[in-house]
Image 1 (tube, rainbow, N blue to C red):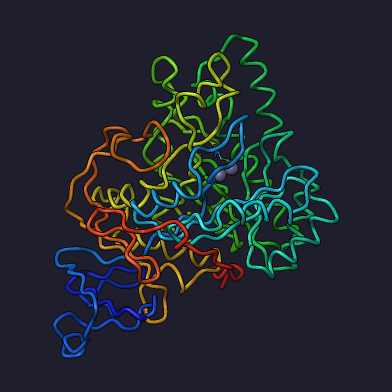
Image 2 (cartoon, rainbow, N blue to C red):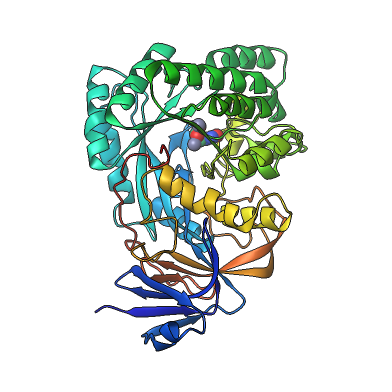
Length: 467
Ligand code: URP
Ligand code: ZN
Ligand code: ZN
């Protein structure tokens, strides 16, 4: 039976507009918006009315970079699709794009099928996949074409992690050439992993084993160099390029230079680079391990360039790179050797709130918040306007957001399956109150009422951000 829902009295915020409008939802989709108090809105009848007075009505967040259950660093990311998508919903995210992994020697098909199986029946919200290419060869290049047809339209390559995910420049060029033909978008982990491994070896030989050395060996210049090289390779191939988890000012500058030339080069940063720094990596004892991720956290001075990039559209997307490892039993694999600390941070639940805090702090506008967290990730990865906006025909993925609530982020209260918060004790203004996914209530006035299996796989079109 089709349920009609009306959301009344809120401020609807999209990337394009801010409207005092009521929203009519039927069959899981947005049917109409009408000015609050208008005759048209007053005439709507509904099975369920949600009062959004003094609240924002937002499109559900689209987190285009997560790693649920990723086997990595001798262990696996601690959020499953079940726990991770539930936590995402708590934080106002209603779509994730996770990374299926091709291991060396494996076909893309095998890796992708494993990811379908992990997610199937377990997700509270909708999900899609990118594909990590770890073994670029004749077979996997042909498979890329098939995946694009199947709705897996983006491929991550690594210039880092030799022996694990790393591809050399020749393989990268071949994959880029293929994507130029088939419409896939290449996503690049841009760090010079070969040079970094030399610096890791030298640091360990000097007895520099603490977590803070992770930040020192993974130099900003080696992120900038790889970003520059990736851009030139993409240019040669005639392919667009999306650089993931940009953290260094010098890397932003490379992207800005490319964009000033009119090249289709895009950049993503993450909340950890906007709110955390090498000060966290240097926390006493082994605490810094909580903040080990790659690219690494940078000195605070880099943050201004990231915020500026987000304002000037040199950076287009904020994703989480959610890849949680528990402090006890996982991060501590690297006690006495920082290079053995599993790389990754939790954050899928915190992104919308942290970016709202950026609105409160004056870094970005309210509409830019929704643009970088909802609309542009949806456009970039072929999900728009089904996802990322509130408009007739869009999926009714809607967040009722209280912009005045004050909350303190903590592992005591978060819902991610990880034993610490990267933002422990941080107070932010704004909180998710109610979340709908395709018209079904998942979070109701801060109670989880969703269920694993509601979320379905969403095939994606090719990048919609190019024109
Ligand atoms: O440290 C990180 N970012 N872990 C996840 C894997 C990746 O490179 O995105
Ligand atoms: Zn990466
Ligand atoms: Zn990642």
